Length: 530
Image (tube, rainbow, N blue to C red):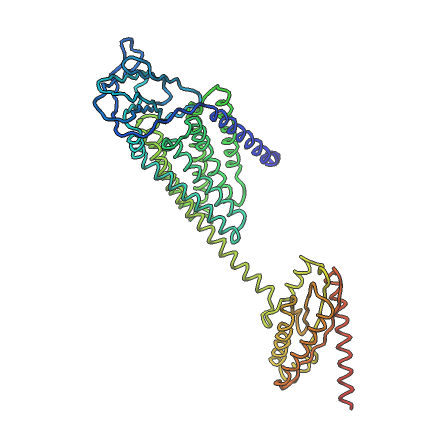
């Protein structure tokens, strides 16, 4: 099992490279497919129904005697599911179509008709299939007709596009507050929603309103459809604390399916739409596997999230069943609507879970920042704590450039605590901290090491500036002593260096401070004797 886990990542990378290579090859071949000419805009349309099979029983005949319609530049629009057909006007061959390996089943074929008077002329279309949709009229009216027919799919495609962009922006805005794992969850969800939008817009042929090759639409449609389970699997894997062997296997199977389908399409062995049953079976297996995981989560700490996602799965399951029935049995061409509604409900449930995750991560992050600040701040003086000083030494042990370390210690604090109480000693410590902060806050970082000892770290500073700051500190203490009942006295020692280690400078400054403290005590004793 350990070997499988060891080679799982390189196998996935190899399959991803193969899938991308197959997509690029298929897209390259699609780009080389000819683009049919597009007529200019027109005004009215007439639908042509089949008259029945020909005398030999081979072809279905669509025939219509054109009436006195005032079309400025008429066009015949034919939608066929990769079925060959021929178009005749008064028995003269006008256009002939043979399906290619990259033909999109829902693309509209536009055949321009002569600009002369068409009244009384006979338009005939022969095809082996009765599944053709044939309309004659002005291009503008036909475009309006297709837009109205695909209004629902246009709505869902735009809705998923907006949702995908918003989720992507949410992941960008929350990347500082949430962890990398939750950030991946949002990005996988955004990728899933954007792929759904791409699939709907391509598969519904709503892009017929602009000049897009049907071959390119065919490749993008199939790859967008086959890639959706990849984002869904990765979404759930990113939510789990430990990777699932089942989901990892399904992910690799989906990648393998992408590689095989792309290879067979490029080699001309089979076309994407001929492999749809296999793709659908693999997608159903993926949904059932995810459903099994959701049921297991109902008995864990993720039961709320599992309940929300199970509701989405129930919706997508029912809608997908209706979509499959429509695609394989009913033939009403409404499967996109069923799938869109189901996927929308699933995405809403996943988005609700993701937002809940983001909120929890933001709360945890805020709490961690608060606790970190509490640990790194001395509550009495609001200076940096000893923990903050040690963390600074651990992360950046060397002060760069011309630097200094100043150590300060309050004189006679024990005597004040013994004679006037600890509250007076605490007040003395706070006063000393205020004086130190007023002078050194703009120059460096100030820390209380505990008790009555303070440390200041200064970078990019020269000795004259340090002496000037110590002079300002002495004057600040003298001003405070004018209004105090017991004076504040501070012993100071410092060390200068160039790109010097903090610990070495601290030991030197501490030794200098104790020499200064001893000298100050001797001076005090001499004055008392005098």
